[in-house]
Length: 629
Image (cartoon, rainbow, N blue to C red; front, side, top):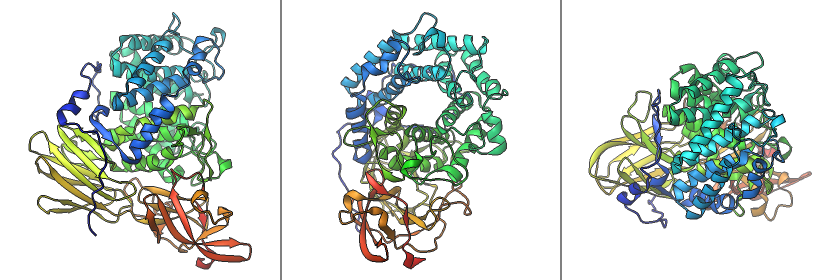
């Protein structure tokens, strides 16, 4: 098949101009991590992204961040108490997403707005350091510590992009008050919040960041206090000990997904600072358990905001599937593990979540967000302020950190020594270690890509290309020499050579269409995946169907387990897959033979599918036609 180069209009910039974007005045950590990251994402400032991901990030900026309800998210601080117990979380989430987005875009409108909101928030801090939305007689109840967690995350994100010492001083006063109240004082941080104390103790993540940027050992001591004492006390969630003994998030604490994974993200920050191996093992056990037992096909977890029992994954509207906050935190957990280990399985999970559940929750027309996004049902994006409408923009703002970066020369990395790693294909440009990479591609709709590498000067290095675990053919050709390479599913394809300016690689990756067995929750049903995309039978492109619930697929009665990697579920519990006879009508629109069953009558019909992220009124799980049973 002839290789087709798909051109994208990208901003023109040189290596020198990209390197110059980075703010050399950004504050630097005061302490060195005990564990060095294996995968280091490319800086926001050194890349441009177009295509599907670039467009969704543009919508996130224009329709959500710049449209933030500024007065509403600050009102709870200015006039206590706030109208929601957790109303104070929104401004911190905004600042975190805005800081990422500003680093990527340098949009002056966003910078002005972000600075104004940060300064207004800091002005609400009380003399003793309190920056919550509760009255003095109701402090440290319900979601009060949780609100301070997001204050810290937001202000520290703003500090990293501005260097404004007021943010660090405000954050220190919060940290000092928390220590005085819970570590040195008489109040119990577990009893101070809901969900077995997991909400309050998720402040662990920004406390670790505060230690990193101040070097004050009291903050590290407080972080250890949370994990080693508060979590393990009789009324605590016992996250580390439970996960190490049971290996199950369902059997840990009260199985509340968002709060538990938020705690685990903080636990990995503490591991990075201390090198305490059991912290990494506990987080890894949780991630593995979710992948095997509790991860939906679309790359999220939770029903009614909780982890469910093994392989119990109902996906209807009534099941409140995949809280947006959970999806984002699941991505953050895998991102932390990818950075720490360099293992491709974590990037695989990130790719699944981003292209499916994360983008599905965003309305690309309005920028509004779905609180829940069913696997079968109708998307309902919200206009009121809620936790997910604040969380999802954070997840979308992370996208530049998920695609590509450098891979350290460590024995634990499968990418090889001194590599440049591409985790997820995307059209765009990126500068990594003085090598400019231009990517022309229409991924995830096409498996073709052309990479042009321009090192500052010719020199040897390894380019590590992650091969998706579902790929059955991953071929690469160096155009200058005609040399060919082949990748193995679930691994990195490593190409080590002396690279010259303008070297080009043609990537030809198949995007196989697969029937996925419905398993325990959807017996005798199947879903369709194509490459990284979960497809949905959408009412909007099936005009001839009065009821999409009457449709069945001509799927095979038996299936084969999919190719996978070390982190994939074992064959006994994994979703089962077989080839699906899918036709691509155009990028983003696919057809497959099906059957319409109307009572005793049935007729053959060509069914049309779109990516789950684009569907509005749809079904992912469809029954097998009776003729194939």
